[in-house]
Image (tube, rainbow, N blue to C red; front, side):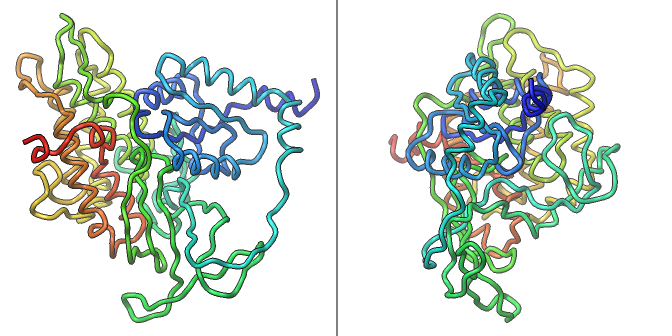
Length: 424
């Protein structure tokens, strides 16, 4: 066994996780396996050696995944997980591929060299690939589901020390294939960005940046094409990528101890899933990992009673002044929004926390009966997609990402449930 093979066998994979529309069940299963094995998640494809795609996706989604694959350095492996029961087996197979020195050398030999310089095109754009931004908080985190290296001074040891987005790096790693209008070229054939007046009357670079559909902690299937000056969104256009193959994941209830549908737990688990995404984007990966575990506990069929750690996590997030400071005033929704989406990002994640607390803090006999959430989630997604362009314009990228995370449109539900007017 040579040194290369030894290093491959001793190292744990760093996973870049992409979820297509319809891949929620597979994503949750993959996240659970990663947690159990201690595999870390990467913020960008450049930092990853294992690309995991959850769900089937479509041609446009596949194009985005192929661009991610091209950016990953070797050794690397790629796997698609479509259903929950195959997650562990497929991840094992992918890790074995990572350890196959001969296969990795063949892959390295087959990769093309640097692209030849080419003439710039003004209609191409950069693709944001998953950097949450430089967090101006308190450095590296001690959570078991790390979201990358953060600039700062030490480790987190308190419920408020989760950091805030600095915003100036939030558009992530770009694919290097697009140019941005303008005639001057940089090394490698990339074009200089066009310039335009910003809100202060200064001339700043104007960049075309696509957010999604393959960003970590990003709603599945959402694509936001933006025009940026500095870090400020000047224009935003929202579209969706892919369609689900089956019913939405959150349309299936969690069975209680008697096998009856427990919609209150289902809603709480869905809220915990949205919360973990927002907490990760806000720069608090420890809390995000805790709410992923809480979500999985809520989804386990059969009897369920809260543990002390569940209560502690809910109270810790609710008391976090720094989290509120990070999200206060971000993405205030129009008055015509559905009630659960009104207010700013803080108001929205607080409602999710209330849904979780209704199960974690309330006695089973005190819980209110809940109804299936599918159609309501579709209406919320429809409203969010319509309002997002207006909500994002004028925000820095860190705020734009928090706004999207606080809305968390469920495109699986949107593709399945028709509007009320259409049904009538």
